Length: 434
Image (spheres, rainbow, N blue to C red):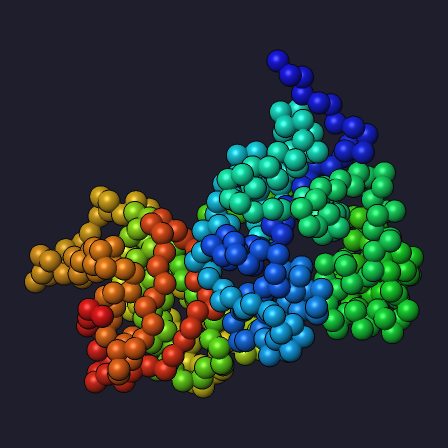
C-alpha cells in the first residue's frame, strides 16, 4: 500500500481551500465550441456587457463589465457567445458533486467558486496539497474544466491564494507566510474594497495591503465607518474568523434579468407566468413539490426585495405557483418601480409522490396537474417550450422557444432574451402548441 504523504511545514494550518474554476462562464461555453480554444472569446451577460472573457481577449483589453461595443472595438477578432445559465448551472452542479466527494463541508461562494474545510480530511487526502491536486485532477477529468486552488488558515487568505494561482494552479499560504503574502498585494485585492472604497484609500495614500495594515485603526474607522474600517484592518493582517458553512440545497427556481429596466406591471405579470412555468416544471422533473413560493425582485439601483407565501399544501402545479407569485407582487403595491430582474423559487420541499391533497366540493377528477403532465410529455417529445401559455406567444408566433432544463436541475436561468408581451383578452393563459 502506498503511504499517505505527510503534509510539509508550508501546508501546516492550511485548513481552508478555495476552488475557482478558471474563466467559468467562458470555459463552460468552450466545452461545446472546442474550435474556439486559444482564440479571443467573450461571453455576453445581461444588459449588453461582458460577463467573462478568455485570457487571449483580456490581453487585448476585454475585461468583465465592459460594454460589448467597446470590447469589439478593442478586439475586432473577438467571438461573442451568449451566456446560458442553465448550462452553467448544470456544469457547476457537477463540479460541486466532485468537491463534496472530498469533504462534506463545501460552501459555494459564487457560481464557479467555493470554499472547502479540509481540516478533517488531511490524512485521508494527503494534506491540503494532496487534496488540492486531487480535486483539480477530478474536475478536469470529470467536467473538462480547469480550476485554481488556494489554501490558507482563513477564507480571505485561501481566496487570495487561488486568485494568485490562476490560471490552473495551486498555492498554499500557511500561517507563517500569511502576513508576507498579504502585504505584497494591492489594497484593492481585499474583499470589500470596491471602486468607491478604493478611491477613499487612494486619497489617503493607502495603496497596498501593508499600507492598510499599518494605518491607525481610528483613522480607518473615521474614513470608512466602524464596520468597514475594523473589518479591512483585520483582513489586512489575515484575521478572518468566518467558518466554512455548507450551503443548504436550494429549491427549484427560475430567474430573469431584463435587458432594460421594466416599470410596467403587465410585463412583470407576464414574466412571472414564464418563471412559474419553468419553476413548476423543474420541480416536477425533480420529483418534488414545495409549499412556499419565494419571490425576489431586483430594482434599478441594485436593491433587492424578497417576499414569500406558504401554501396550504405542497404543490408542483404551474397555475398555483403563478397565482401565489402574482399575489405576492401585487401585494407590494410598487406602482411604477423600475425593476432590473425577478426570480421565483419553491421551498419547503417534499416528495411529490404520495403527498396529501384536500379534495374540494365539485372538484374535477382531472384538472391542472394532468394538464401540466401533458405539457411535460409534449416537451419531452417535441422539445422544451413546444407547449406554453398563450400569453407568452408573440402575435406572429415568433417567440423564441424557452431553453430547456435537464431533469432534476434546480438552477436558475438568468440573462435570457426578453421580448414585449402579446396582449390577449382577459390575460388568457391557455396552453397552446407552438
